[in-house]
Length: 291
Image 1 (tube, one colour):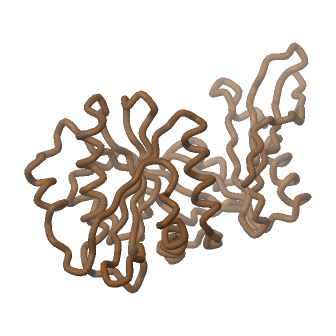
Image 2: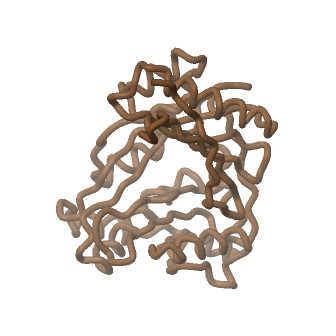
């Protein structure tokens, strides 16, 4: 049966990106697979590919046809590379490697069971004095008096280990950090932020963000943890993350656990996660095709 590739109109448009979409189907309308290509507003960023083929339709050329459409779409839009995340050892990994993609990054995913947390041990970390620094936290949008320094602290993520991935550091200002928080709220989730403040001048030295479902159930997701280079070596990452965990346990008693993912090359953050009791669950590989 001949295969048909149909370009779709995707309504998922945001201020930071848009998506192209394709559906692979047979003449009778039976779907065989789909591909989505996210094109970020910042044109220096690579395109993000999400491709799926129904298991019974694999090895019939469906994925190859969809991939060709997506790569052509990225080239037509002037992108310099395309990347995709696949679970280690999955069929997707073999598929991408056979079509010119190269593995550029490995991410280890881990989970902390909140029921298994020792509250006394956690308090011992969160309450440990860090001379010259203090912890501040908020929910949702950053307070106005901290907005500028919070945006400036995002520089902490600029040098995060990204392997050989095509990585462009983000550009942040007060309005962008506010927009991210509003987007989380609009979809019904809760954003909790803990920061370490330099007591000498009131500037933010590091931050950690946690997103929890609106009903406070299931697993929360760590969005990012970073410490500015000039403030590293003082244990601020462990301190902030411990406080975020303590607040999550206290404020969301029905929350099951917390999820995080870390690049394998990010040894300091891996040590933080290990010290707090996060248990690895699986790995994903990032594959990249240079155009």
